[in-house]
Length: 187
Image 1: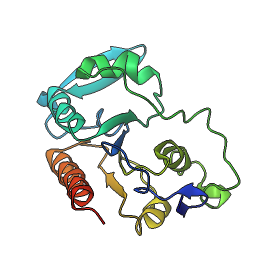
Image 2: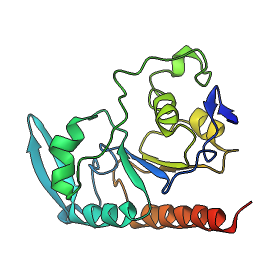
Image 3: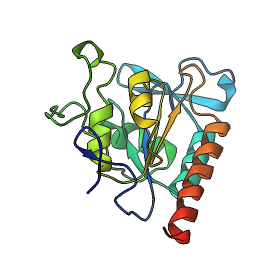
């Protein structure tokens, strides 16, 4: 296995039918202050209010045709209980962020960056060498720098005010298609 980031296999070396798409919720599917609030419906979940859009549901259905969707959110397994059904999604796998314990061969980073980088190593471990895209409103510069040389990673930062937009979906669909073309063409 070719090593990539730290001791984690390089993304794209492990074949898979579809690339993985890691999805955050807050700031992505639940924007903070959407410019088109009429496109969103507010839902009460406990003491929280989340804004979700039927457009996001349509876009996620499109993305499911090309990607394996995985929650990469602090909602973890609760995303399947509260968010997925509102978007018409089946139960999805999720990255266990709160239970993750850093390993000696995880990507190196300063201790001061641990809070901002808390998703990076768990996502890399979950991907385990498969191609993946990650959509989040907080993708730290250090993660972007570590991902830059790897064709098997597509990072999609979104503005937390508006969240996921059609241009992000189009870029993801294009990227997934390019990977499929490369696999069909061979080495």
